[in-house]
Image (cartoon, one colour):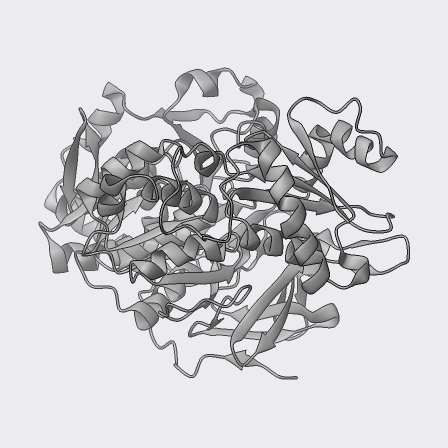
Length: 571
């Protein structure tokens, strides 16, 4: 059994979330810890103010009848956007030994009600009273706290005696590293979300590993829009900023308004930036057509950008290379807190390669080349789901990630999600992710490609264009001179014919070659449940919503296709 692991030992790490805040308060005091826009101007909170507010909130929580030692009274759910008040509440929950249960605020009511009921929470904290009060009251706990209200302000402004403050600080330091800190729900791409149980040791060991690998300096600035109910934003980015003594600034563009994002970027000037490929593609679309946007993003203090959730197309990362900004990639899951591997600070990216294990993480290949992981970053199991927990672990504590991969001298390569594998009519197994990535890498005007076709002779593909780049009125000199600017989806479908034929001929084996393909002029969205909160496609939803297009391809009848579909002619 070949085990891949870092040559660097993890060593000791901060035992819990509360101790992290107390240590940073003592070390950085009046340095900025957090920033967000208030009346359109960025307001800053120091480490001392943030920690004092966390202490005040913790006193309120413990005086409200919540009990860290009672599993029926220790879970607090959050349905809210990213802001200072939510940060204080979540960190107070974890610091005093209670369990934080974030839930995606844009889930439909029915799913939200199921998750609240399933979580068996004792308190719910939200910034949207109208949304919460529209839910079935039977699912709601007795204790409701609404942010940005006079009542909440009173909680933060309560007077605390020195003795009480000292008692709470001692309580923070006494929370065991093995204590449960969060139940974070998976994105739910393949069914009802599973509740991942993460302990203080999972979160803090991860941060120690990142400290070893990246050596972040106190005072570094971060600009954050990634949602905190998801592991990429809520675990990786947020805790990196907090653990390193940096300043976490909220981006109120929410990753949707790219002009606003770049405006915030120009003001905060982050030292490192975390995002997903779909947003980087939109940013590059602006950079290629606006000198102001280019200067705002590629400022002289930007050290590197980080991408995860899906591969970043090489055509996009080439822009970062031209500005001498490394693109760092990672791989992991919510169940692994979330990072398992990191690529090096290099200008050269190898498609599909996600780097080597971070300190404290071991990896090996299992049956069907499934990647197995072991380490202090791995969850203890799924909340109230013993069958799924049992299935997820094998002898020796190895966690089954569900990702098919390879291990080479260049690092770990991700092939596909195991669950997305399907069989063609000849019985051959096909992993669609590899094909989708080939298409997205080949053409920067493709935002998403979705490959399917169980039981077919060859796979089919739906293509969703990059509307930001398609809308660009001029070509930029940094564009690939060999790539025509399509200008419309009809033109894109025409020029993709040649690109897909090249991929079929030179990159894919016979049965993998794409048989039929359509360009669909639509934007996929979180609101329509087509994308997960980390902007991954939800396969079952795509096949359900675009069934008329799929049926037309299966029956080879394109006469009744909607007007927003364009056929890609393939040889």
